[in-house]
Amino acid sequence: MTVWGTGSFENEHAAEFAREVVQDGAFALAEAFDVALDPDNEYLEAEEGHRALAAAEVLAAVLTGDTRSLTDAGLRAWAQAADPADLTYLRPLALEAVERVLGPGSELPDLWEEGEDADTWRGDVGRLRAELG
Image 1 (tube, helix red, strand yellow):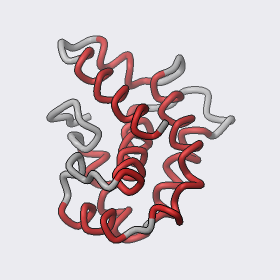
Image 2 (cartoon, rainbow, N blue to C red; image 1 turned 180 degrees about the vertical axis):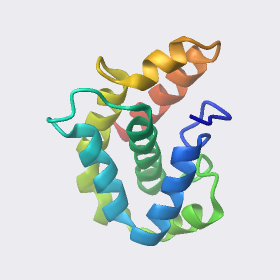
Image 3 (tube, helix red, strand yellow; image 1 turned 90 degrees about the vertical axis):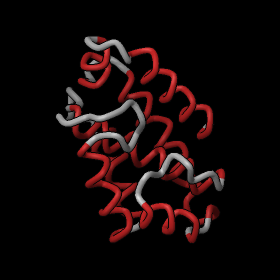
Image 4 (cartoon, rainbow, N blue to C red; image 1 turned 60 degrees about the vertical axis):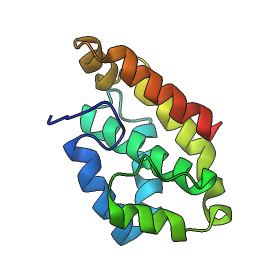
């Protein structure tokens, strides 16, 4: 896993996901949440966790109008053009996916706990949860 920061888009999986959102729009967001919430998936790998957090970050940016956390210019433009009313149905899924990423059976918390930036990462995810809630 290549990670260069604690933000939702500061890793290789989320950077790739940004391109998918620009191409596929809301479908990419819904798919990331569906994968994270799949009841047949007992263990959430880091890649799926990163994608779920990135999708939640995009949704929060659309709903709040604050796109500062979106590091990709194309993604930022997509989020600014998206109609929040068309995406509000994804809010409960996003919140549930963020909880799944933070919960037991998820690789990301374990990976972050091994490093010195765990508190920063948890704080950023907490901010994201608050923006969605």
